[in-house]
Structures are given as C-alpha cells and as structure tokens.
Length: 338
Image (cartoon, rainbow, N blue to C red; front, top):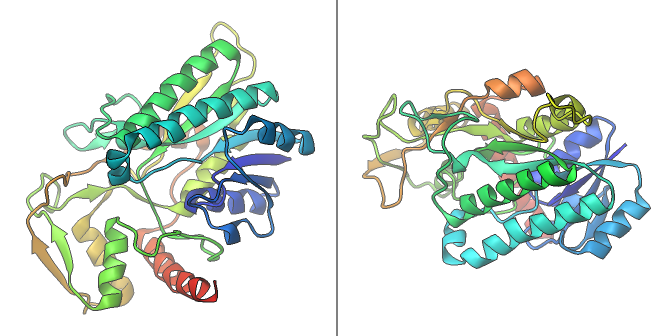
C-alpha cells in the first residue's frame, strides 16, 4: 500500500511520511522544494515538481498504481507573507489545490486527506472552536484555505471525490527520532521565540498580560507534530468509515471536517513554565503590552477526532519543547554541513 503526500519535504508533510512508513505504508512524496528540504526526502520515493503539473501526477500514478489515497499538505502558510502577497497565496493554496483534485479524479484516486487550519473559525466566548463554529477567516492565508475547502466540498458532491479535512492550529516539536523538523532557523511562533531568546541569553517578552484567559496571557493550541502525523495516518486508516464509498441516500456527506486539538490550549505563561521545566529556572522573562495585530487566540475541541479517528494527543508540551531544542541543534549541524 502506498500514499501520495504532497508537500512531503516540509515540516508537517515529512513527519507524516515518516509516520506512514513506520506503519508499513510506503509514502510517495511530491514536493516542489520551494520551502521543503531535499534531505527530508532521503530514503523515500520522491518526485520534485508542482502539484498542478498534471503530466507529472499522471506519471506518479502510472508508476505507482497501488497508491490508495492522497495526503495534501502542499501550501504556503505564513500569515504576514499572505498579507503582503495575497495573489500568490490564492494561486498556490486555492488554484493549485483544484488542479491537484482534478488530477486525482483523472487517476481514479477518490480519497484525499486535506491539511487545513482551524484558524478560519470565529472562537466562542470561552475561546474554543468546534466543527460547528462560525467561519471567519481573518487573512489571505486562512481565507485561501477556507475557499479551497469550499471548492473541494462542491467537487466532492458533484464528482465522487471523497475528502477528509483535518483542521488544526499550532504544530510544534519535531520528529521524535529527529529525522525532520522545522525548516526555518527562526520560527515566528512563541516557542520559536523562546528558543531564540534562550540561545541568545536575552529575556523573552510576553506581549499582552490582560487578555480574557485563565492567566491573562494569550492562548494557543499547540500540538506535537508527531501527534498531527498520527492523526493523518488514522484518517487514511479509517477513511472508508468516515466517508463510506457507497453513496446511499442516508450516507454522510463526501466531505468531512475533523478538528485536531488539545481541548484546553496552552497560555503563554504556561508555555514559559513548561520551557523552564526543560531548560531551568534561569530563563528570563519580561512583560510588555500587546502589539498591534496580536490576538487572544483559541483552542480546539477535539471530541470529533476521538469519535471518528480514535485519536488523542499523546505527547506533552514538555516533549515538544525538548524535541524542538534537540532539532534546533541538529538543524544547525545540518546547515553547517550543507
């Protein structure tokens, strides 16, 4: 059995590929290497190219007719970049996704697991989101994902394509065996900034301490990237149960959304406390006002993921911090060798 993974040389896609390989499923990686790292494809079946290249996708299926599903992770994901160049984000995240879905249909592959974002929801008063939460994407990145989902939903209804969309918020950590991790040496999320502050010996700034959360600091739903990878494997394993191939009148829709999350999130202060448990109490922190554009955040109710995927996060925030620190050191060595 094989699974086609687009964006399989990126942070999440490469981790998903390793998780499938450990389950005895052969990953076939398609990546343009615009943001992916070539070393993340070592030991895997790899095709370099664009997901919109129909001839290339046709060749992949011709050479690997035992591909049973596609995991679509290829996307641009940096919110500030999407605001500076929205056309590029719509072109890659929306148009290319539609092209790729057409290529799958032509090759009689009707199973797609789509990597999406829970950032498109409007949080409730308690800052949680569920699959029933109102959609309110706030930037071109999340809007491009929401638009792609709308188009895929229509294609599923019309053409027999079946799609499971997994929406999540803040992947952190690294492959526990340190085969892959974040490509960027300067990630912009809070944990990345903590690691940067720790390594440079300067105080980490908590920006905003009067948000309506349990300790006044912003909240995020951090999930270890290996737990996310496990969810993608589970989605493929249970695909036909989630979206049955027989389209009876009472069958569930051919497009299903499943949120991945922790159920309570992590505040910035809680992340600091977890970081200190790993690196020691001498990690310095200072408080500062919220910056323009900062938001209180949200967390995901994962009840449906447990019901349909039999999935819950297994790694702790502390695990993710340790793996992130170990990967940062390994990435430096890899970059020196390169």
